[in-house]
Image 1 (cartoon, rainbow, N blue to C red):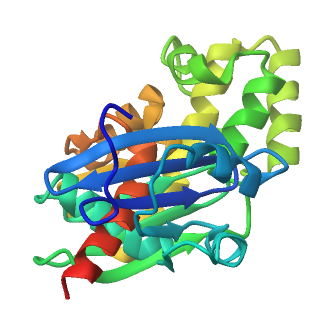
Image 2: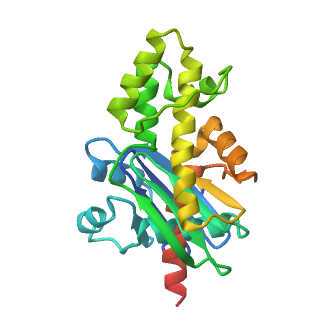
Image 3: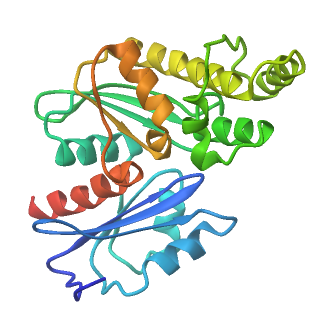
Amino acid sequence: MGRSLNSYETFAGIDIGSRSIELVVLDGSGPLHRVKAPTTFDPMGQCRKLMEGMNGEPITATGYGRKLFAESFGEKQVSTITEIQAYALGARFLYPEAQTVLDIGGQDTKVISLGQNGKVMKFEMNDRCAAGTGKFFEFMAVALQVPIESFGEFALRSDRRIQISSMCTVFAESEATSLMARGERAENIAMGLHMAIVQRTIAMLRRVGVSAPLLFAGGVARNPCVVKLLEETLGEPVIVPKDPDMVGAIGAALYGRLGSAC
């Protein structure tokens, strides 16, 4: 980790999501250590590996697995925080000017409206359907035989924009297959899929009330096509942190640090 972690000076945050787990350790000046691993079939085993080298500092858990984490590591100083709170804290810490937070993760999408002091004013979360999430992108990238890491760049090579009418994963794949059978370029189909997801996301943003600047977090924030389409539609630049999937873990660690100061 580069230096010894002192439990009186450092605070850890862990974000246990459906696809990946992020761990961040903060000291008084900011992130001291950050690491990520896939969730796999054994999320608590992955958490244990990520925490190797820690010296007992308080840890705050967020994400789908936060309650299981608290039960599994009861011997540690564990607290929990909702994903909404964690992303709000992490976003405001990284970019104090942020007014809206968009997080598109592996299996959910979150939109959070922030007040002047970083307080959550309103939010909406889609966690009942994979449509519009990272899982949808993974599925469709496989269908088009494109590596998920380059799916956004692949879509940006399109030469025309087509509409994909269905956001259901099964029906979208069927529609993509039908378009390919009619000779449509795979890049154009990929762009159509990205456009459909962004349109769905924009609807969520508008229901919550989008105000610039917008901070885009989560693994899908690494997709350049999604970022481009969001900026085009909103008419504003979008803030993408250097490590967009670490925002929740940073917020969780901040919660532990702020709570200890009360």
